[in-house]
Image 1 (cartoon, rainbow, N blue to C red):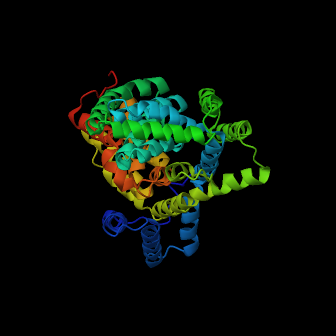
Image 2: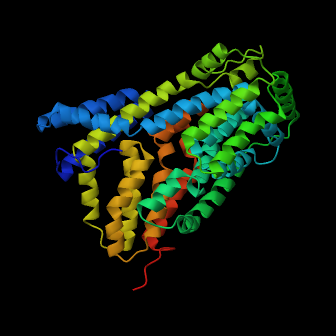
Image 3: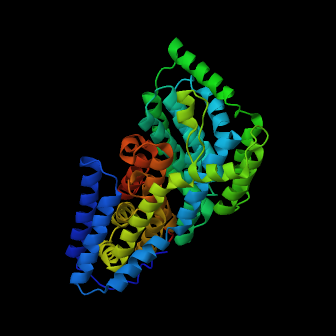
Length: 462
């Protein structure tokens, strides 16, 4: 974890806001206008902060420690990314993803297809408590279905991200849900119950939005395409009822609250074991597939493009970007920039509407600056607990804000940990699916409106 109080310099408020504005503007301009990958603008941002530190006589060792501290805070996520990369390969080898796709195609000609994608990913996400695992398994399958039917991939990805993060936000198994309630010392189920005020309207608005965008799939051409794809998937020899067992194992382990890393490892072993029921693969080949990804060779172009993916190597773009983004965040803390901005915001908190709105904007801002949802929850929670208590507000108001403006914002940040990962596994750029991630957009808007108006805001008894 980045040491948030271990700064080596205290910039002025003007310096802090100017530096953050310059870095975020440079990254946004590079990605939106120039359409570059975010790595280079992040490196430029790091060099700007190093130069600022040198000018203000901060030693390079301290700056390097800041970068190292920032990068090391993401090691847990990086290990998960490696296992998820292998799990995608194993799910293809065992037939789990092809079988999910085959079952999903039964729903593809239902009315309101994008609403179905949102609902299914929301249910699975809430069941296993992991947005990234949901997106990397079920999400990949839905992307494959939409690709084969020539449906909009950005809208599909928006529905997947919305559903996965609804599940992540509302599941008692989710680490962010537990973290948000723990950091402000609120009962977990009281926290989840209070989130319903913003989550239920956001959920319903998302369903309506995806229903409006859903295509009509009643044409003979569409039905023909679905039947053809299902037939071709069956022809791979990967579609079997037992191929869904790894998903059941993952669900059971999540319900039993087994930590993510061992749960993924156990599911990985089960998936590989099941693959021997329909494919004889040498250990050398399994090792190669886990690293380089599964490669489909049916000779049917649409099937091969759908089923060739996964592996540790596919996560390297994600890992490098996460390391750079968190290194930038480490420098922002080492130079006291984040602390100065948060301190400035706290000084003007005299009303409940101002305090909660500022907390929401802080969580959003930290996501944009640092690209890490856990830090946005921890820092905002720690910084705003005292002002919330002084205003006699119940802390469950703050824990709800942490989720509404912290958890669901990270997948919308192109250089954020979740944004980078989702782009990697779904194959859709963050900025492309962002306008369609309705749940992730509506949730923070509702929490700001509620905070500003005072609706559903509760107070302690005097």
